[in-house]
Each structure stands twice: as structure tokens, then as C-alpha cells.
Amino acid sequence: MRTFHRILAGAGVLLATALPASAALAAPAQLERVGFRIEYLTGCTDDPELVVINGRYHLLTLTKADGSVAYHLSIKSSGVGDDGIVYIVNENASDRINADGTEIVLDQFRVISKGSSQNVLQFVGFTISPSGVLTLTTDRSVCVG
Image (cartoon, rainbow, N blue to C red; front, side, top):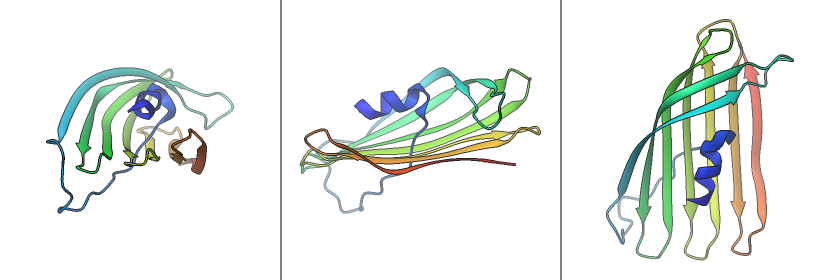
């Protein structure tokens, strides 16, 4: 959970962690739906545009019998930039904390312009060892369109 709060602050995040249907759950799945407002600075041009994003995020939490916890965050929202351009924002992230304390995070963050501005696609993945060592596995940001 510690990672998701940082990610929501604007880092962009998420893919889905798939648990097998037979995985034993220690507690019922919990679903949170929360509204948010953030400001995002596009980095595709020499003159970045500030986009104010309003929406709701959905956070699903699954706790397994072995003590591991999986979080899945999804965001579908929109925002308006300084220049009046409307953007569609989609994010999917997963954060899995294994029973041994290893944390695995995957995130996909997309800011798609409904105008002539470029689209931002960000992909981030990392692990944190039980001792707190962070290892970046994916860090890619592209501008298209």
C-alpha cells in the first residue's frame, strides 16, 4: 500500500496481478472507490502542459492465506490542460507483497490527447526486497502522436 500512495501522487502506475481462481483468500476482497484531483505535467515538449485530472480510482485488495497481499488500482478519468485540450487518463497498476516481504510493482499510465498534443505512455516496474533494496525492472516513457 505504501507504494500506491506515492504512485497516485503523479508517478503513474499499474498493471493487474492475476491470482489463480484456486488461490485461497484469508479475507474477502475489499474494493475502495475514491475521488481524486491531481495535476500532471506532460513532458513531451519543451513547453510541458499542466493537466488537471479529476476522477475516481478503484483499489482492489486481496489478502491470501499465506500472508501475501495483492493490490490492483485502476483509474479511468479525464483532464483539461492549460491550453484547453482535453485528455483521457487511464492507469492500471498492481502491487503485490509476498509472504517473504518482497514487493513487486507494475504500472501503466496513459494520458491521451483529444487534440493535436502528443500522448504520454509511461510504464514502470520495480521490486523491493524484504531488506528495502529497490530494483527497477521497467522505466519507459514515450510520447506518440
